[in-house]
Image (cartoon, rainbow, N blue to C red; front, side, top):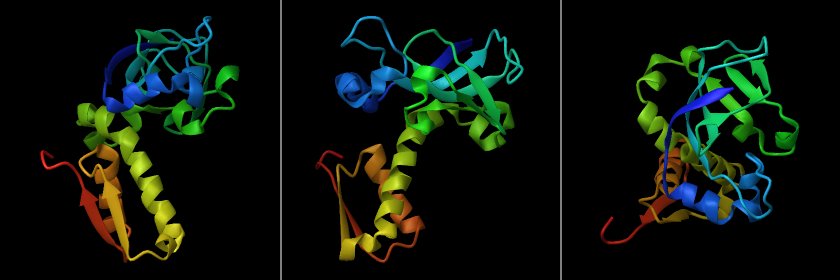
Length: 178
């Protein structure tokens, strides 16, 4: 049993709520009423009770939580990660089922929990987009135009394109205000 200690709320959580039923976000934390769900958030929790030899009371984790106070998982420890192997999550994307044990992470990550909760989930998406473009040789394009360039995902994608050594020119487009 994990006690949710803290989590970030961003525009991404609105997306989880708006399309939660259609895209499957609500399947992570099921409720009895069809068409309703619990909005997921990224944050931190602590093990407060366990019947498993995979985890100890007091260990802290970073991961995908319900917007609530507690979460029960069926943990499988793989290195510094707990995987929730609950039956209802087996068919869902594995990245959302992984809970990182914070004590086993670099101190730099431990010191930046606020930023991590806000930025990390979308940075992973940024990397996947940039990597996909690289793997496909940018589909022959010489320029990559990133709209909503002030968003976390767009900003991260531009950064990762540069980091991966993209030969394409990246152009960010955002509102004048941003």
